[in-house]
Image (cartoon, rainbow, N blue to C red):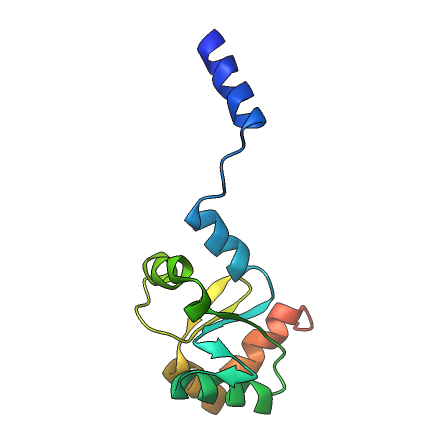
Length: 124
């Protein structure tokens, strides 16, 4: 039991840097609508990222963005974490919606607005 107490004390006195999984969860939940993309909305660095930003902006969907090119650990880790191999990745309320093709389909069907309204708490 003393070893467990010593281990607890060591953990408190020497906090470990958060794990990659913790960092990813924190980033995913940084905003209700979170986009992981190459570049930033003001300077997208690939055509798919540019298109998804244009779609979200046209739909008046406020979103936060993270440039996966700025952090290789996040870039590789999020692929495994989300089980989604490509970017951009769009999340609503911490849940992966998908990439550009899925977002396009959801806009065309009207489902994306429904998801966003539900996430904002303005739904029924």
